Amino acid sequence: MHYAATLEFARAQDAADPLRAYRDRFLFPSLGTPELVYFTGHSLGLQPRTVKAAVELELDEWAKYGVEGHFHSTNPWYSYHELLTPAMAGIVGAKESEVVCMNSLTTNIHLLFVSFYRPTKTRYKIISEAKMFPSDRYLLETQAKFHGFEPEDAIVEVAPRDGETLVREADILEAIEANADELALVFFGGVNFFTGQLFNMPRLTAAAHAVGAVAGFDLAHAAGNVLLSLHEWDVDFAAWCSYKYLNSSPGNVGGIFVHERHGRSFDLPRFGGWWGHDKKTRFQMKHGFQPMEGAEGWQLSNVPVLGMAAMKASLAIFAEAGMPALRAKSERLTGYLEYTIDEIAGAFPDARISVITPRDACDRGCQISMDVAGRERKLFDDLVAAGVIVDFREPCVIRMAPVPLYNSFEDVFTFGRVLRELLAAGRAQ
Ligand SMILES: *Cc1c(COP(=O)(O)O)cnc(C)c1O
Image (cartoon, rainbow, N blue to C red; front, side, top):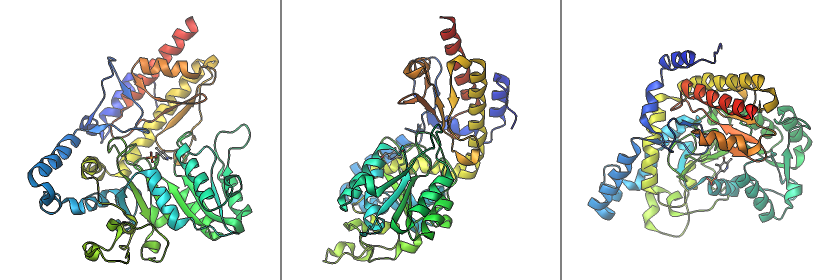
């Protein structure tokens, strides 16, 4: 695609954008700066305007009905989670029976490991990417120890080659081959939180299955960002949070996927609670846990309705806009950000800024990670002070996500203008 670093170009792109009206459905924080560019949807998505009324409705229903709201409110709380399933299944490319919203992300992965990380003395290894999100790394370490293995032995990390920043797919496939007989699980982030690298989930799943291992993914940075077809890809299990690209409110409930193949495996080890128990006999409170069919059989507790009300409002926007349209805009918008950074990097070679995210749209979502070697935190602090809200990760990476639902080409242009001004001011000193 052809891009130009002018305000006219950016505005023309926005005028032609079929999704442009969605921006007004979100509340942009006012952080005391005259203009604001919000590029941190990868950490916390913005609040949809519809969220407040959705939460207030449930507060009113609670006041009006008390416990009777479980069955008699507008959206009965007893089955409230079911209202989220169709939109969530659409976002991750799953059948409705394969998805449920519950708990939070790290909790959910641990629960899924109960069923899907079943190491034996000889087959116990987990292959993952190096530089996983810290919570996932702690999770893997403690799971390995819980089963009596040494993390250093049980966890095989595939790292970028020396002097490179991205993990090569060939190296992952080779690690799977090399550990074929000892491999229990391939567990990757769908999109790496640090570099923005999107892994080829169907290929990794097929490679895992070919050696008799299970394939699972943490989709925190993939859900609502890239196109997913978890069912078709034959992924065994996955989990994600809803407060990043899915805009559901800070720390809100996550989602899980369990492939249909496992949905009736009632003898899979799992931890039980009343909400995962067969709905028909849930209230008989007898001995003998009988899981529900599908992903719902992994639930433990009754659901937090206020959080889910916010999530329901947010997911409705995704159902309306549709992931294919969002992804189409996302590729162009992120391409524009990449172009903008490249241009500036060329104009200011001594600033030593560079894009570390994959160059091919097929290998990334909307996030661009920019290495600012030599400038460390200062450039980040200056960007934020100028109203460009981005994120900094040690040692020297700024992560930005132009989100197709609410970011614009003009946002990208403004970012570029501010970055140029900061670098020019630095050079003048
Ligand atoms: C954001 C994120 C988490 C956060 O986990 P919580 O349990 O929701 O706090 C975990 N893993 C990855 C990869 C993430 O990006």
